[in-house]
Length: 368
Image 1 (cartoon, helix red, strand yellow):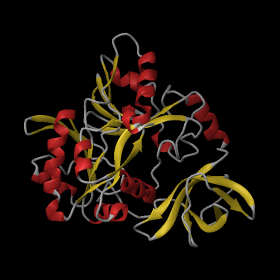
Image 2 (image 1 turned 180 degrees about the vertical axis):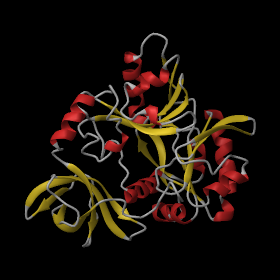
Image 3 (image 1 turned 90 degrees about the vertical axis):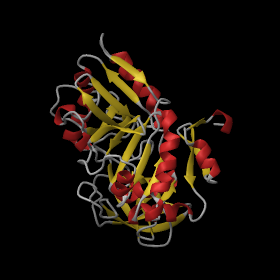
């Protein structure tokens, strides 16, 4: 997609002024990294103090009307019956074969109001599917450019929010609807880094002022603006799935080890029959982590071999700034086990790896 055709976040001018390196993320021009140390410096800031990410490219949608909660629960995979108002839930939009159209966060505002945050590139499709399935009285709205999303992640995230008069310290995967400078903001204790943190959802036109205030608030903690490059290394260290890599319309939750986000006992959800059958039969491939034991960094698409035979493929690979080592996520044959020694074909060079179950870095986001 040409630069002219890319959408821009409400913080785009701030990123340009900071000298950020920009790239296409789901049709949006978003920062990969900022000058002064790049991905490793930004990654380390989050692991040791605090970092602030613009993730306004993420989608926003609203399902409202009498019985909105029940409607969403009958379509998306996780069980909204497990949570109460004011809680958020990771869930999946699956197709009839059990593949993942998108993974998203559902904010349960009330039985009649569910706010959704899908991935940027998949928002229109999720909204289309929900709209086509919605009964009379249920409205599905695409609010992609009505809200910004700013993630504040790291051990000092509570202090940063408190300095701005924003709520902090609430339960993991819960949210508070509050005001900042007279404007509504949702503060949800979620994130994609493994560290303690929050995602702030302000109105589009308020996002710039909130970002500026956060940039000032993180200074006492040596906090940094962080690009999506660091977000990717942080989530890979945790083994978090990324749609388009570990989750796709051809990769199911059973294969990706995210069956915990499926309400198996629910009467219905999209893809249920296929997923139940796969779970009972056992998947043909399973997600694992790979820790490089030799020099080299596995990358997405690299073949994984055992004794010269193909046993899978890397779905994500990167250099871990925390471990100072190559790490990867991969889909492997079902007979592969933790501790197995394999090799990854990195452009014709075999890099030895050990099979492991993520996370690669131990961080308990619920307790931290």
